[in-house]
Image (cartoon, rainbow, N blue to C red; front, top):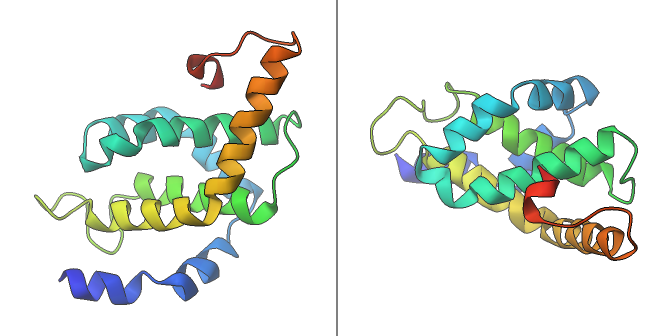
Length: 143
């Protein structure tokens, strides 16, 4: 079963799915933030929960026009990762005990590799914004 998932989740698959993401998808992500947070905090994705919050913060700042120094590929990748987590009927349905989140974990981990430098740049920007006196910085202020 895991081999089938590995075959289906590859760079070409992700690139084709990322290219389908649009503003409506990002709105869906933002509208379902609580449900995604809940799912990430109560599953094997828990160790990615803080990164998910960082993604939400970055998407929020992007959508509000506050942070625009991010490529569309990164924005769409975050949208795909969060929508994938939200969808209970993906490659491996989430209700299957023990294995239901394996594909969610794989998608999230692969996408993180693609966008990691942009997430670091966003954090650096948030810290610089705080230092310049615009806002007090804390990780909670991102979310």
